Length: 293
Image (cartoon, rainbow, N blue to C red; front, side):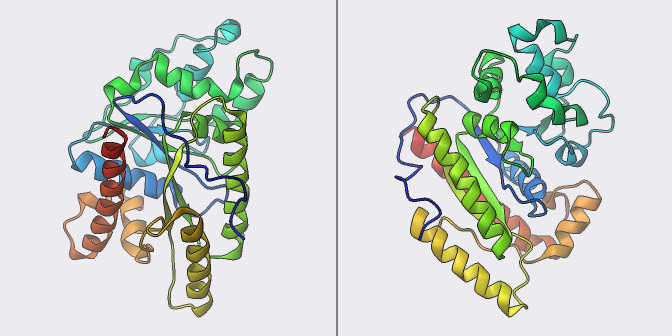
C-alpha cells in the first residue's frame, strides 16, 4: 500500500514559470536534519553559480543561526508576512524587506524568530486565503525575479506554516530517518499534500527527492527499515526518488557546530558529503531545466 491512494501528486504541470524556483525542506518529524540539508543544499546551488536566498520559516530559527544571524530580536519574516496583509494594517510595523534580508558571502537570508510561532493566531481572522500568504508575499516582492532559488526550512509540524510553504513551493525535498516513526510521519505529510491538491488553489509542488539522513547501517534493523521505506517510496514516486543515504555524521556535526557549510572544508573527510550535496543540487538543476523545455 502506498503513502496515498489518490492520483499522483506530481501529475499536474506548472502553468506559470517564474525565473526562480522555491524549494522547501519539510518533514513533520523533528530531528531528521532538515536544517542541515537545507543549508548545505543552498550552498551547493550557490557553488554552481546560482543566486540563492535561504528563507527560515521555523520559529526555532536554526537556519538563521547557521547562516550567521546574530541578532534574532529584530524584524523577521513574520513581520514581513504580517505587513503584506492589508487587513492587518493595525499590526504593521516599520519593516522593509531590504532591511530584513541579511546579505551573505554565498547565500542571502530572510531570518525567522520566535514570534513566527504566533503566525496562525495572528492571521486567524483575515478573509483572504490564509494558505497563500507566503506565496503572495514572494510574488509581491518579486523575489523569484531576484533569486534563482529560494530554499525554505520548514518547522516539524503540519500546521498553517507548512501549508503556506507547500502552496508557495515548486519543489519539495523530504529528509527522513529510516524508522517506523518517520514512515508514519511521511504518510501524514502526504495526506496534507493531497489536501492541497484537492483545494486547487495553487499548483501542487513536485516531490524532488527523499533524503535518508542520520543513517547507521551498522544496525541491521535500520538497514532493513531503510530498504522497506525506500521500496515503498520508489514504488510511488519512481526509481531514483530516494537519494543515497547520509551516513557520515561527524563532518556534518562539525560543520554545523562551526556554522559552516561542508564546502568550507578542504579535508578529505568532507569530500563524500560534498559529492552527495552536489548530486542533490544537480537533480534540482536538471528539474528546473526540464520545466523550461
